[in-house]
Image (cartoon, rainbow, N blue to C red; front, side, top):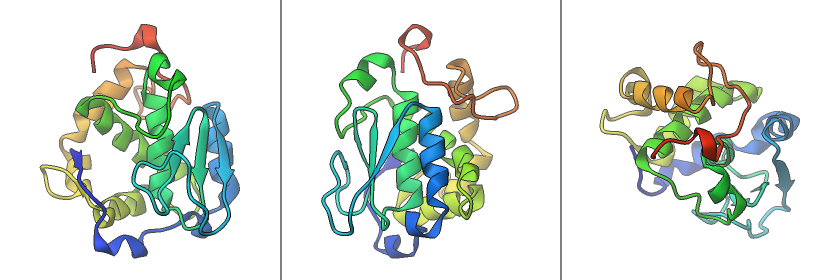
Length: 179
């Protein structure tokens, strides 16, 4: 899996203005994060992709109403999936291995069910529209195939349980394996 660039179809992805906003606050709080909502057009601190994309600085997730819902979840999942050392110095670029990036994507899809009005199917569609790139072709094909490796990566770090439910725990350095 690789994130290459935004597609021209990004305008049709679901934004935070279209989901129940309190759900994101509640979800972030379960992971010890705080969502900071910015005014329309305000620059988003810590945004790796710029424009309306979510940003990360420390334990803060920066968003606007026009931030894509999948972007907010993706950045939240980076915070969850990184180890303590990287989390302590987090500013914009989450870094991490390819395996971790796939774990982020998998957890993002699981957590989409936590946002009323979003859900897994829409998250997978929005990932495709935005420009996520998986060797299987689509996000749905990845979910049905190679995502099993991401699932195993998350289970090894106790970020999801055996039934694929989020544990709402953060990855810890002492539980981290290479990658």
